[in-house]
Length: 141
Image (cartoon, rainbow, N blue to C red; front, side, top):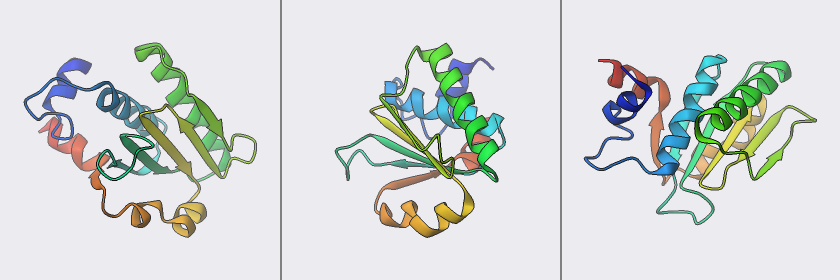
């Protein structure tokens, strides 16, 4: 299955229409994070509830070193496949919450303590939520 085929077979992305740039970007980010063992990858479709972006992606890393590795993998893969660079990057020095802002997709890479404390998923609870692991299993089956 090619990368393009995978996008079209995924329920997160397949609705009978072609992919939007934001969907392609969100999926690329999620796959890159998964390749560096990010945990609990959640995609929030915030298009109807927020003017900041179309998607928020939230994930957990177990150490500051892993957060940096996840961030680097995302940046490298997105630049290589889509030729995009983040509009803004926050938190790389502290490495307890790294934010990669790609405009239509904002990625939050967090240590477990920060994720639990800030609980972004609950704050944006009215957004459509997708669990990346579930989507991967669905598209593979």
